[in-house]
Image (cartoon, rainbow, N blue to C red; front, side, top):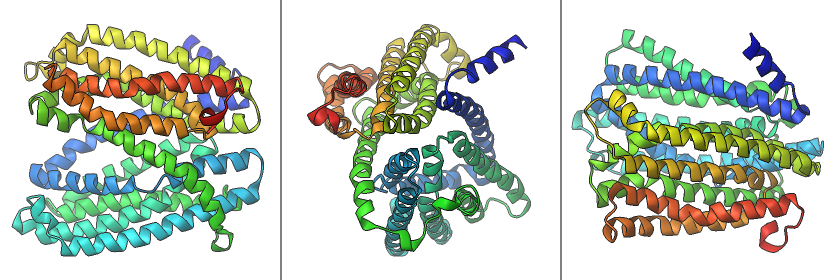
Length: 453
């Protein structure tokens, strides 16, 4: 009971913005934890129903389409900032203009992209490129078309979540994401009673569930709580697209840079070290990256909170929230050190004798994770204020040197898997230095030139 009382005290302490942020972060951690649990449940169920080959095909299709979803030129993130600024200024007219313009532009992109992908789906021999068994080609092509259409719908409708983020209601997004996963879990429990190992039925259930939930959420909230922000064609203003695009393209380039920095490690390890090194890195990363989820949650909540505070000139609150997040980071630094020190015991219990992970790999991964979370702390302020040009340049630089640095450490210094991780660390060091300097300038109101863009 004392713990509950202390928790209530923490949640009710501070101004309205702080209380809202703390409650959303706590709710998000709980809901996200339940979502992860559901993911662990439906993974073996899916594998058991489809078998290794069909399940592998399904995951490959999703990963390909997921890459296309990243090419929305950052309009959604631009909407989060611009809509949040308009709401903070209580300018509802401007807010609805941004929403209407964002939905129209994204809808236009999706229609064009969907048509192109559908044509390619039925004309290119992509199924042979993926070594799809001949007896499954027709089924896979039909499923490919369904996934393309479904993800096209999600591409547009999921922007309702950016509005929730901008309104500092992040827990709602996690709740609807959880609801999506739960709905799919219910479907894959039912599907085996309908027909055995149907890739088409299973894949359609997944695609349509993930598309229809944000669609229904948008239709409901734009008729109720967000009625005054409902998008209309008559409110589309292409001059407002310039605002969304100029900020959104920066976020887009940052996102692509992050994909290059973080999503190439396995490929580099397999290519320049050994395939056996991939599971070593993956296991260490899965074990030590738990703090990444925490900082993603904090980032998503405090980003719009900083937008509101910056627009209202509440720099005092921004400084205070930054100090709190820094304290959290130092705690995770201590926990990461402890986790590395006991990692041999954890790996032996978790992986038995199936995989041996050198302590040097765990140390390198821990440093990489702590460096990324350090950068995320300052990205909260930079993203919230929209002053991301310098951050964008730093990420682009990091993306350019990441692979060459990794190859240097492996080929010249012969550091193996550790060398690949050191390549990531090296590429991010400039950003880890620049970001705090820029944030301190912003909070001291001394930013000029590139520091103010």
